Length: 277
Image (cartoon, rainbow, N blue to C red; front, top):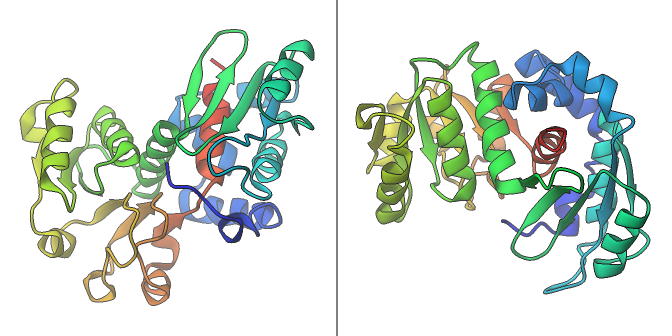
C-alpha cells in the first residue's frame, strides 16, 4: 500500500461533490454507483442499508504513525456515501474496543502495510489494495461501455494491478501485463491462469509499443511518467489508481474525460460496499 501524506488528501473532503459530478460525466455512475458496480450490488438496495450501517474509523499510531487528517478524510468519504460513520476519539486498541462496545457494524483502519475494513459481525475483511484494483477495473468497464472481449494493458503488477487484472478477466476481457520487473508480471500471469486460459493473458515487454497500440489502460504503478504525453492517442482510456499519477498535467489535459484518477475515494467506497456482505 502506498503511504499517503497530508498533501495527498488535503482537498479530498471538500472536493467530493465536484468529484462525484466528474465521475457521473465520465462513467455515468456516482461514486457509490461505481462501488456497487464493482461488487455486483443493486445501488437502490445498498442506499436503503447504509445509513443504518455504522463504521468506526480508527486512527493507528504504529509504525510511522498517524497521517494527519487521514481518518477524518475516510470518515468524510463514508458519510458522503451515506454510511453512519465516525472517527474514533481513541486510537489503536482503545478504538477497536470502543467500536465493539458501541456495537458498531464495522471498523476501518490503516497502518504502514495495510488499509482494511472489518465487518465485526461477519468477519469479512475488505483490503484497500484489492478493493482499489477491483473498483478501477470497474471504472474502465463503465468508461468503455463494456470491456468484454477488449484487451486492457495493466501497467504495474503489484497488489492493485493484480486485483484489477483479476476483475478484468471476470469481466471477460483480455489482459496484457507489464511491470518494470518482468518476473513479477510472469508470476502474476501464472496466478491468473486459474481464472482464465493463457490465451487471454499475455506479458508485454515493451511498454512504449504497448501504449502505442492498446486503447484501454490500467495505470497501477507507484511512479510518475509511465504514460508519456506523445503516446496518448485520441482513443486511449485510462483508469489510474497509481500514486503518484503516471501521467503529466499535459497528458491529463489531453485525456480529459477519458481519465479517472483519485488517491482514496473510490477505494474507500469499494471497501465500504464490500463490507455490506
